[in-house]
Image (cartoon, rainbow, N blue to C red):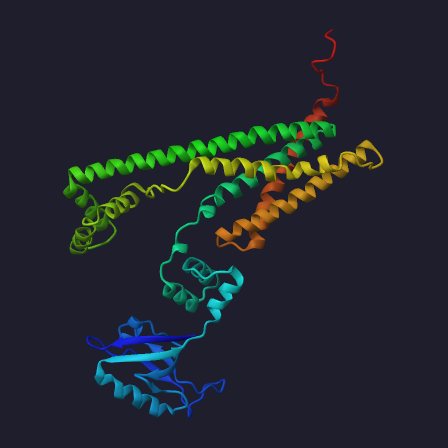
Length: 384
């Protein structure tokens, strides 16, 4: 991809060196004139030039198929003008790979991929893309946490009930009854809990911001001094802190938001965030994924496995397999929002779920050994 850079030399030097030329090919036989080094204080780095760029022309003079000495002379001749217009060819393989993998190339997508692969060139591309609407968290992204957490809790909780009933050697009808009762009750509890906690957090954050705004209006010098003291504690000099706060105080909303983070450790309230939607996402995610351990008991209830014991064992085995696959898949999805690999994330979630299920199974098995659960009296039994 061709890029154009304008280097202004009014207060600094050129700031880059070149390699290559028709008489100085590199190890691959490439004869292009390329940027071999960029100085941290020169005009080149200010303009965005970077190591590896292939220079096509300087001030409309071609550097294609020229010797190294001729390339140096062309650049030297352009320096007295105090402005160099440099056309370069920059490889776009990193960016194209992001487009192929992600389907888009907004700054955040590129930056995340650069960090995972520790690709410095891709990181530079991310900064060159600049800000865009994609930088803001999408509505779907706001509810990923609730969806993943609800799904994991739904699967593990429901399967723990299934495993405990199976361990106690109770009938399949009991599995379905207890599984659905737990699924609906816990789903409602999780959804309402997510809604109430999110609402409380949002209300608290808004109240704290309103208080900080009122204090700023009543005593701006006092608020400014508080922030200066915080900056001094972080190692800034008095002059640096005074300068920064002098600028910030001229932007009230930014100052208050910044103060909430630094002084109170609270992120500014997001007006677009909806606790009700978070609660709904949590509830439905819990229900949908929580159904997975029960699918085998619903889908294969009428299948003849030879005997009742074999049927119970088969249904429980299918439930184990489906649950394991779902746990691993959710763990792999969770890795998209962390630095952990998809495989290790899937294994960790699978291990966590398996541990909970094993504990529930052993408890059910132990109770079945202590108490004859199948002969426990029921409300329909005749009283003695």
